[in-house]
Length: 558
Image (cartoon, rainbow, N blue to C red):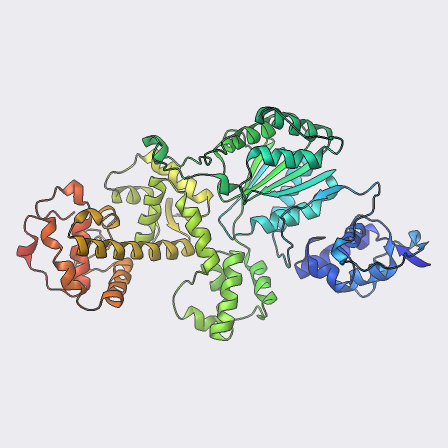
């Protein structure tokens, strides 16, 4: 016989504070049940207020630093139980016994969260929307690596007792809606013997009926993978100008799922995580409506410091605050850079910052590439111009850069779209609103731009044909006519980087080779060459190539 103990309400609150300090979730942090030498199922029963064996109870408390486990227990409910003979099986595989308090869970592809810091405001607000306000559809958006999935796991883990069913599905494998509906129905409708429907509309109707009958929490992670690019060949001019979040071919019926879940009567909640907000949400969302959106930003400084402490830093290093700001509080970026600083600079953050650069890891680079590849044409134009400008600029200044300026309303809509993806920052100073890119985005765009320009120059030198110039025609890498550029020797930061890359890749003769391109510009219509002549002129100056005025006669310079 052994004692069976359950936690008191006050005890659970104390344990909750202790696990927050360690950055652990309630039941999705594997280290907790492993440190306690118990199972995930036992940890779940602990949180549900179900009596468990006293040794496991004490170990769960010890794992989060609570030695006086008796103070956690509800001693009025101590029982004697018969312990079964142990069976050799993985602890994580021990099933949760059936009980009145046992809700149905299917965590699918949800990751375990080794540590989780901060996000108290987000957790509180999202829980309030789900539990108090009864929201039917919630979109958790933000740029890649900002922590959407980790927050969704922690939130679901925290409030799962408020729902009869919890089901997590990742859309990364890009399941057709028919397959997803079958998966959801098989789990949610426990009484159904065979799941079948004649149409997607009917399948969605069956799912909504389940959401009416039972209070379910359904999480769809990485929804952005079923969005397509806005600039498909068949897109209309307006579609390419505006930031349309189209669905990939074959996935358009997901739009009906979102509309109906957001509009029809039921008692459940669908939570989406996505780098981009679906168009269908804009017409349905509102502060007092059952469809809402939360745009996730970077970690607060104190929470980001805790992340560095997990990595072995003291949290008091010189320059840590600046480092967190540079990387926008992105958990993914900060974890990667923390490891790199330890390996290369021996943990010296000040020494790393003295290099005056932003380092992007492979994972973050991939996420940015994926996100930027889905931008519309005008969104890409704005991103390039903000990277070239580097400093914050106003909407009016930005618009003057375009060869064919969009209307003010188009440009405003585009800026809002980019801000919603956390790709740019909006700065309000002295009654003036200015815009600039996030540092990591600016670094990535600059690197990609320089690589593309080098490829263009190499192709033109090989074929002696200006048609290979794309980026250098469309964007001005240096604009000496601007008020802040007081002479024609001004070198923009991107022009300097391009010069250095050209010299490194092609050697000191590259300037003379580029000079041979100049005659190809003569007699060309200004509208066709755009900023090309200006860029080549400034690049030759940067490469210290003597400029012969006669060579430039008959060449339009914008």
